[in-house]
Length: 121
Image (tube, rainbow, N blue to C red; front, side, top):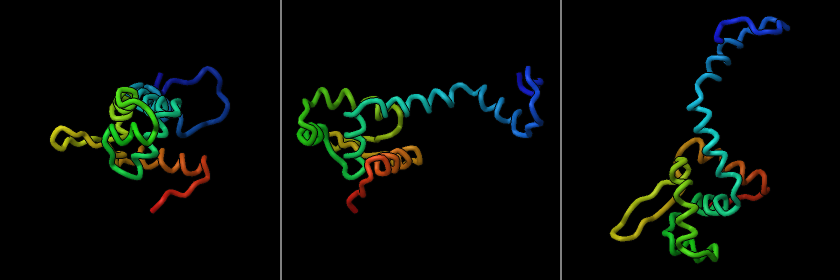
């Protein structure tokens, strides 16, 4: 479909072939959908927000959110798989924090703006 004429010709659009090419890259849109899926769960947003400000283990996250460790682990997995958080192991303990990526920073800024809050420095 790229570079083909569209069924309805409205006006000459210089960027249409570029947009059509981008639309064909379904894998990129799948990555975006996975990241936005995280926004549909309040608990994941709360965990992510916490990890934007500190590095914590599952036990401490559980205590702060008043949840069981297995429930927290259940929410950490998709956050990590989507690249929003990272983990590191120290002995038997695993610590989590927000990833230092443009996507993670953008999501953090969105949370701040929507909630109209300023994060502690």
